[in-house]
Length: 75
Image (cartoon, rainbow, N blue to C red):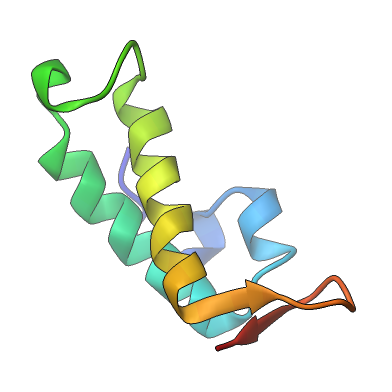
């Protein structure tokens, strides 16, 4: 279920990440959704969706970090 817009992202993403980080998340999720369609490419029993979400969060964490104030900030 790739996302067409950031407004379709899960609440946990939209409510916590800055707009640019949301765009990173969406693009990484959509790419991983395609890249890990084959279960043999995923680790363990992870579903396609679970894997795509993990990849998306990883992509965000390369560009953003959660600060002491509890908000995400660009690195």
